Amino acid sequence: MANNNESIHGSWRNRWTFILAATGSAVGLGNIWKFPYITGEYGGGAFVLVYLMCIALVGIPVMMAEVAMGRRGRQSPINSMKALVSEAKAGPGWKLIGWMGALAGFLILSFYSVVAGWSLSYVLKMATGVFTEVDQTVAGDQFNGLLADPSMLMVWHTIFMILTVGVVIRGVNKGIESTITVLMPLLFVLLVILIGYGASKGDIMSAVDFMFAADFSKLSMEAVLVALGHSFFTLSLGMGAIMAYGSYMPRNASIASTVFTVAGLDTLVALLAGLAIFPIVFANGLEPSAGPGLMFVTLPFTFGQMPGGQFFGALFFILVAFAAWSSAISLIEPATAWAVERFKVSRAKACTLIGVIIWALGIGSVLSFNDWSEFHLLPGKTIFDTFDFMTANVMLPLGGLLIALFVGFGMKYHHAYNEMNMKNAGLFNLWYIVLRFVTPVAIAIVFINGLLPECSFNAELLNAETGECGNSVFMTPRFIGGVILAVTYIGIIVKSLQKPSRGLSS
Image 1 (cartoon, helix red, strand yellow):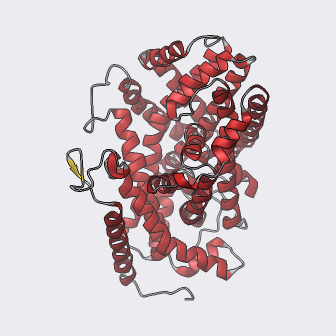
Image 2: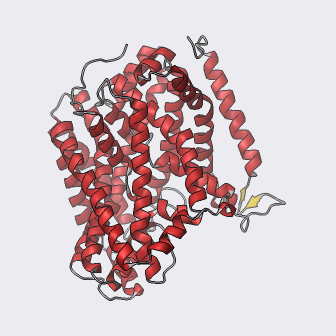
Image 3: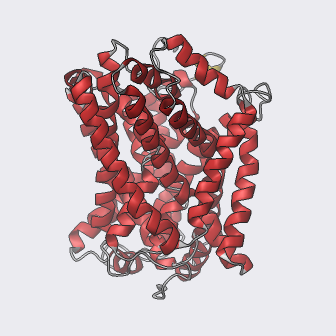
């Protein structure tokens, strides 16, 4: 039965606190350096429409399921899954969801902290005028110089981990809640200020045209896959954070409306970030880009050329640091909560120990950019690249797939219905059907696409007659889709046969 007691770790004061915390978890570097660019690159308004459809079919259903699992378990993701599996009398293999989520968050933070440290470094660089009136080559040299200096990377990695542990160590209410309720409003204020700066000093109309003018000719198969993948990864699904935060959610709060609000705010932040970034990029006659190159080379250069750029550039990197910090807090919470429950120790001891282990793992990522750049855990992949690949391409999609299947087929129907607290049974059944039969297929596509060669959907690299992509064999998109659908539905049918059918009205 549902755990109606409050979590031993505390609970959110109200629904809006959870919304801010979950939005803080979802909003990260990808919202700033990736989503605005892919929106413009793949059709602007047309891409946004496809993306919103993907969010409705993938992101929101899985997030609702993960929140429900957390609230029903009222413990860390690992122990919540133990309780839920026992309640459902399901196979012990389902417990993997909790362990894999906590481990994924653990590994992600070890390299995410290193990248977040770059933003802290750039707050100082911008504030002290390092980029004032320098050319783009010098801006690039600054970034390359930072990556080549392991001691400086370690300093910023350490500072960021101390900031993260310093919040979580104080608990759910005094630490996470108090910080997030200040941090997230500040993030929105900074976004508005930077948009105002871009509108007054940059080329706002070119930015609006790039991001929102609908160009359906750019909606290729690749664009749909990009939208599908981002709709899953943007909401922090499958890494234990949302399940942990869900365990602190008030029992009477509506999961559906809450999750829709979080998804909407996450998308809003990403779109606003584009309106803050691209006006100054276009004003300097530069081509839009994405990733670290945009964040740590192009933008510092452009701010350095503009009036007031030193001040507003520093504000921008404070914004980036806030976004990274709010995500990092959620990444360390699942492992911390488990350690408190498992070893019966104080949160201070548990969080400090977890933080030190993550910090130590991060040393490998620091050295991946310099002294250990030739050391590869996987072919062609440094420690940093390996952790990124294993979490983003394997652990998170697999975790999300298992969450959808467990709630759709492992958890009893009436348990899911009661936990959702939805007054409209028809809307619940719609969500339930999508979660069971649509979402798993979509996540499977994301999963398999992430493991395919990069040229899978690149006509220039693909030999259409032989199906060869470099030294690997390529399967056509149509064939891949057929295999995915067949394997997924066979798996669902097999799983359904393991238990008596419950139906949608049982």
